Figure 1 (cartoon, rainbow, N blue to C red):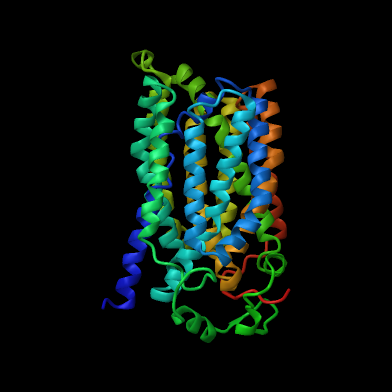
Figure 2: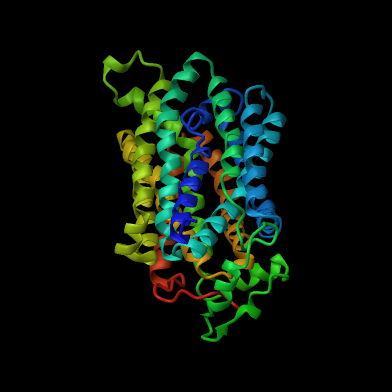
Amino acid sequence: MPSSETRGRQLVRRFYVYQATRSVGFVSPVFTLFVLRDLSFTTLGLLSGLYSALLVVGELPTGYVGDRLGRRTSMAVAALANAASLAGFVVADTVAAYAVLYVLWAAGTVFVSGSADAWLYETLAEHLDTESFTTVRGRATAVTRWVSVVTTLAGGGLYVLDPRYPFVAATVVSLAGIPALALLPASDRSAGDEGGDTARGEERADVARDESGDTASDDDQDTDVSPLVVVRRALTAPSLRWFVPYVAVVLAAAGAAETYVQPIGVDTFRATLPAALSGVPEPALLGLLYAVFTGLAAVAAQNAGRVETVLGVRGTLLAVPAVLAVVFVLPRVALVAAYPMFVARVAAGPLVTPIVNGYIVDRVPSAGRATTVSAVSMVRGLARVPLVAGTGLLADRFGATAAPAALGGLLALAVVVAAVRGFGVSETERSVVGDA
């Protein structure tokens, strides 16, 4: 029988295999160009708003599904929903059809957002060390990104052959997530999964201090409380009360800027590339661009643990959005500045997300871990709704570069407020949230 540590390392490697199937690199460099054949920026913004609103509605119940029916069940539903959405883009040509696909896309996002992190955290707790969560989660994100480096190159070329081909290829990758999930055992701590009492026994012994300084025993971590109670306890705790809204604004703004990378990229190519490259199809150039930037994002994700060690949670969450605020505005002044904007935007999420999720799951009891991570994603989705709708209107009226410039202004304001007021980060105390 392998030791618990050896078993843990095996499971981490299998988790990396699953993460590889979450790559959507085939479509990422051409997605916006594809849908803009049928839609305006305003309509695209509204559909993105629909997607974000569905995240708000769906994150909490799907996190509860992950806590109750099993992490792997929730993750499998996500893989199927993603595959159905990607396949649908092959035939969609109306706003109504696109809306249905965005609904499926949202389902694929919400069913995995809390469950994957909860599964990983609990596996580390049982076999290895939860202190390594940020490092392992960052490396898992890097695996997805490195797969995307290859698939984005192929995606641009496939788009030149036929705009539908990247979506067919991405569908196959998403479906591969089902057999990859079969390699993962059930999480011992999710109520719906099979498992022994090892992790539960460990948790009974792991008595932590809540934010009020009182001891949070096993009785405080009641697995029968409603998801709303779990979320209320977590999101009103001092360590998360201001942290979650701030992170939601930062990640929502970074995500909303993605819509404008491809149209700005095409304009930038035309304005800055030498004549020798003028005959290369723009989708192929976008594939190359995304491959380079995705590789940089993978490096950022791999080093999330190191960045957290050097800067801390607070330092990272002030520095990254401050950089984004500057680079989002610069293309409005000089189009060539779009290149550093692309780099910073694509690296920010993979760098910040493992740090954010690690901070959160360390402060939430096992029974509600997936529910709470999903609730945080729900808040981020709520913040994203007005951003994607509003920037779509700006882009149609003032050009694509106006949208990230507005988002940069919002990020600058958020950083200033957070730096002055603070946002509740406790760097040293790693406590489980009890009653608020």
